[in-house]
Figure: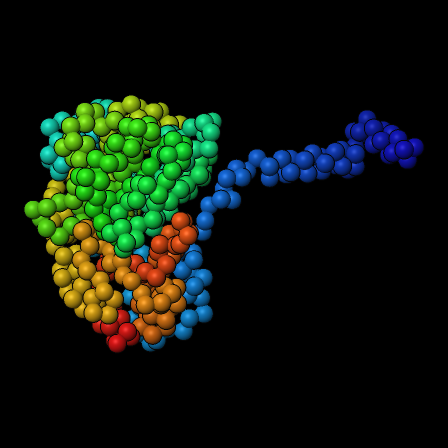
Length: 439
Ligand SMILES: Cc1ncc(COP(=O)(O)O)c(C=O)c1O
């Protein structure tokens, strides 16, 4: 102590004399203690819900494939659902002509023109007599960000034990959105036994009463299944009874096989069932797959005006307004159907060629819609995918990575997802290699 006083005294004398001085050890010690405290606090204030997020399927795939020796053949990747067809010129053109839009802040609600264009597209596509562009439509930066942020705007974690219903297998964003919104995901298994549909009865009355949000995906990823009007009727009845919001993920809606029979959408189903104003229903749509622009990050949400008003408020703070330049490209894309028909034709050709080749060895059939084959494997799906890679240099995704253990099983186990996103030639080559490997 006496020593401390002497050091302090010498320091003060040096300072008085105008000398520069070494830092006060007491001050250093105090700063270090403060820094430690701050670090401890910093650890505490990181959101603990982050720890509940699972690694993404592709991280699991990397781990599964590490160390696998591949044959000396060109790699063909059918594991990721990233569209590979060319982006239409009209979108490039509209975008380059709108570069001046980079000089302005966009509004969260998007321009009137964009919302009117989207509302027009919805009305044409789903034969809706009315959809109010001003209150029932919002642009989003791709459906992924919207599916996630929507849950944050909808969920009320202060109510007891909130639940979010997800199909199983499913798009992993639903689960993460539920966790970070302070809710627990619950899964409805979609299996061959229920024709990849929903068993609403697999949740108890008490569980339904806790459900605040329910995700559906139609056409489904990975099964390609489209929900029927009867299923929508049942789901709307449950939503009316228990008061939960329905988030209908329809980002594959424009990839289908029969031009005269596009997949039923949720807004269309609501209209057909005489529901006015789409109560508690919001659909999520995207240009990524429809127009081969996964990098544009452009989509929309549409439905219940009250829900969307809350979502818009959330988004204003979230700061996810769509760039004016991207809005211009999106307007051009939503106004044109020719490129979408050409895109569908390319997928149709691939399914027409591959399904007859693969059905004898993998039992696949053409899905209702979408660009995936959900194929049953004889044994474990991870072993199947690894062996296939080692034998053929073709990558597919094990189904169990897209699903969770629920009701006593992982409904993705024993399946693989094959994304027909590569060129027709590459898909054909991949199918030949798969057939050769399995024969
Ligand atoms: C089921 C499903 N929903 C949403 C998305 C997100 O698509 P985007 O954000 O490009 O609209 C994907 C992407 O693969 C998907 O498979």
